[in-house]
Structure formats: structure tokens, C-alpha cells
Length: 249
Image 1 (cartoon, rainbow, N blue to C red):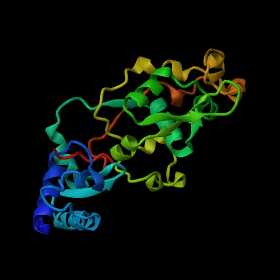
Image 2 (image 1 turned 45 degrees about the horizontal axis):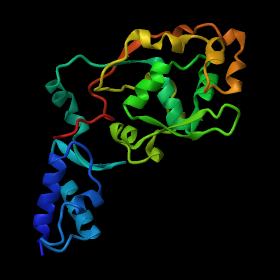
Image 3 (image 1 turned 30 degrees about the vertical axis):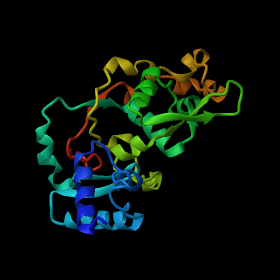
């Protein structure tokens, strides 16, 4: 039988070598029955607890997110470690951030419902970008004429924002504006032109959108004028955001 100290070392090494979080079942699969009895769930949980405790006072921590456990840089040293990556900081539009926020907090939600809330059309490029990042996915279809797609967030979304579940999202009462978010994105940026469609009044494109809800057509003309605050202004993300710790490899 493998000694507990060896189990702990194997788990630690696996987490450091992996490029993504590992769950307890995935860690258990590392041990073959013919080699020795497979460690129990309690043994692996205990090893994870001790590894997390071993990180006290260090620059890294063992964090449980939606997909499992991972080592990551602590918030108080992230600003310095982030300087290892010299590429240009990715910028994301207000339109994309608002769309992602509505999906996260009001899921499942249709594209037409998002447009009705924002008062402007949702760019196809925004939806495509969020799906390519695997932050959102189609979770079903609304039982209304046209069967519009229902969008929801994914485990990858939770992992990126350092969340174990949707219950850990900050209360809406604490969020006054999308501009309060300070997000570091490590993937390819969206060009400013990608959001041009998103800033058109929803009523102007609803007739061409097969997924739009009928309610999305009922846009008041006063809301159909582009809001200066909703122009495709691109905001620079901060590398010091605590919600996007760099994962160790």
C-alpha cells in the first residue's frame, strides 16, 4: 500500500504538472489497482487539505474551482508575477462585458431577452467570441415561436473567474456598473469594429435575427438612439485583478 506521504507528493506533482484543474476522481485515476490499492476519496481529500495548509505564507495557494483543484499565484504578489508576460494587454468592449454579465446573472437567457434589457442588438461576433472562449454555451431552447436558444455559462467561465459555483458571484447589489469590473483577459482581443452591430438599436436588426424574441422588437424609439456610454469604447484590463490568478504550470 502506498504511504500517505507518497500520495501527497503524487497529488502535488500532478497539480503542478497539469495545465488545468484536476478533480478528485481525476487524481484517483492516476493510481492503478495492480500497483497498490487506490487511495480512498478521504485520503485524497486529506492530501489536498494538507497541501493547501502547506501553502500558508507562500506566494501560491491551492484553490478549488468549478473543475477541480489548482495551484495559483496569490493576489498580493500577482502584480509582480504578471510582469513575466510582456504581451499587450487584451481589451474588451463594454458591450461584451454587459452581455456576459447578463448571461451569468440571468441564465438561462435568450439573445432577444439580452437585447431587450440592453436596448441594443447583440452582435453575432460577441456571441461567437464568448462561445469560442467556452465561457457560454447553449443550454436549451425557449418554448416560444422560433425556439430561440437559451444561453448559460460554463465551468471554464467559473474557473477563469476563480469561482467554484455561480453562488460565489458577487451580489447584484454590489455591482453598480459594468465599468466596476476590472478583468484581465489572456486571449485574443476583439477589434473595435466587432461591436458595431451590437451598438445598433435592437429594433433595427430584430427582423433579421432568427433567435430574437418577439419582445425584442418592442423597443421604444427613444431607446433606439445609440447611448454614448454604449459606444464601442474599449477598456484596458488590469493585470492586477484578483479574480484572474495566473495558473502555475
